[in-house]
Image (cartoon, rainbow, N blue to C red):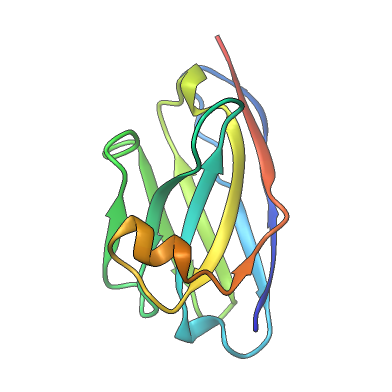
Length: 125
C-alpha cells in the first residue's frame, strides 16, 4: 500500500487559487490512479478529480471542470490539485486517494486502497 499525506489547504478568499499537494510514500505510487475527493458539511462525498497512473488522462466533476487541474509527478511521488476561481461552495475537507481503477466515480471510490488524512480548504466570501 501507499501512505498519503496532504498539505496546502487553508483559508482563501473567493477567487483564490491554492494548490494542495499529496505526498506519497512507498514504491507503488506510480501504479495507482489518484484522485481528490472532498467532503463538505452536510453534503455527500464528491470525487472532484482523477488522474490515471501515467498522468495521461484526467476526469473532473462538473462542479469543478474548467477551474481545477489535477496533476502528478511520479518521479517525486507527488499529486497536486491546482484550484482556481474558488467559490464558497468549494469549502470542504479534501482527501487524496489511491485506487487501481480510474474513470467512473463509483468504481474509483469503491476501490480506494489508501486515503490521506485530509486538508481543509475554506473559501471566504
